[in-house]
Length: 170
Image (cartoon, rainbow, N blue to C red; front, top):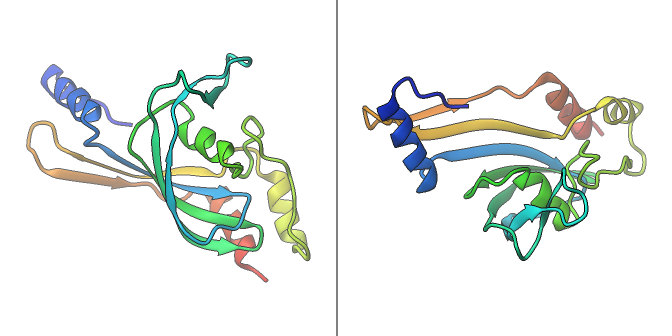
């Protein structure tokens, strides 16, 4: 989250967002094994039947999501995700549309499943995970007044890091 202290800073930040000069990076876990990255370039708008959801739809606004495989586990992949646009639920909608729902995202297609020979600890962590496996970890922008590049990073939440540790255990 970015907060402007002055009207001048607010105006500059709004302009930077419109020109896509603010970089937002996420970590996400999808319920499939991927070997590479890619770009999802699909328009997003309101779901035609479920007004509280978003969906890939021809009447939607342009949306572009870039991703790359950070780590692959049996049945799951940890991805680094960068947004070029910023639509509501963009990451969740794009990955669900590609058949890659985020772990824990019951709204956009996650269904609890375990790879064969999963450890009891992984089973426990997956059952206890009650949110989307999505973490906004880096935000970069040019300071609206000073013109300096600024970057903030957020540590991974404990529940997500515990889940990743369980994936890594054989």
